[in-house]
Length: 244
Image 1 (spheres, rainbow, N blue to C red):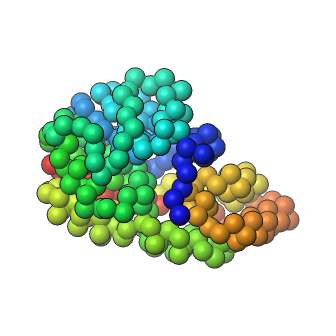
Image 2 (cartoon, rainbow, N blue to C red):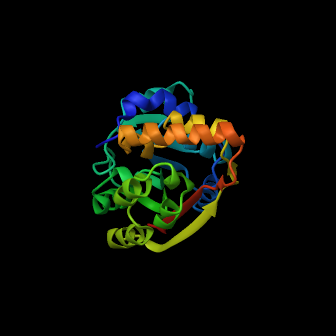
């Protein structure tokens, strides 16, 4: 089942504006490449785009296949080019960018090799950066205790980071490397439970409806009883990058 991002765009944007640990390394890579022409693939509502532009001004093109997500990005009035399109058939000439990023996108793209070959094609030089989740993080995520399908759903759609790195090498990227970054621990409290209720990550859109409803009810009961649960959630992201 696919996630309907046109339908969830407004709620997605409202719950996905926190500072993320992967932005600092992305910005550092863009500076190291002296990036001037940047493509963000799967830019969604433009939150990462805005963070990157604020730290590294450049000509930015934001691409997403969802018109609803792009409408939300447009409301931010960023000085960028917004383009609706497919990550596996990028609507751009070859060699027109010098930096490409895709943050939590590859699990929506079954044709991994095609994504990498297209990313390589549109770069003249510079760097491509893909941010994803590790299988270890998924399997050990605390929400598995409330939603039994959580890890099965995400391990099935997130390619292993080693597979991503190998696909980059097959496409021609050099010096491919992986870096793991961690965010600040988040308490599991009423505010977090309401983010889960709003399905702030796409995983919750794919969990069976009854399982989600029952798991959310248990989570809310536990939070109501204890205020703050006795565990935290720390975002772990894998940054995989390579040079053209």
